[in-house]
Image 1 (spheres, rainbow, N blue to C red):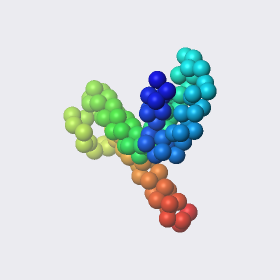
Image 2 (image 1 turned 90 degrees about the vertical axis):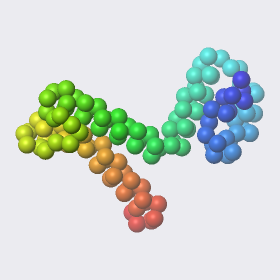
Image 3 (image 1 turned 90 degrees about the horizontal axis):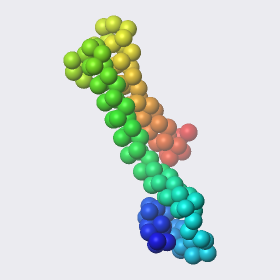
Length: 117
């Protein structure tokens, strides 16, 4: 069970902290609370390791959801529409907003990694 709990973490994390974490788990009773804490920690580390993938996935889900709602509301018949009314403009903005946010975040991360920020 302890090996499985360590294996839930991303490989780079395991390479850096795995041995120490195994030793900690060996000295710890595996109560339900401990299991929940370790699984939550592993999930958090997985998200951090795949941060951009998670953001892109969220942007896809959000844009798709807004587009579906716009179609259901009769604002458009397809995924592309002109902002000819305030409601259509708002729906189009809501569809594009996740991608704009992702673009801004990517730009900031790039500037930070190159030392230009």
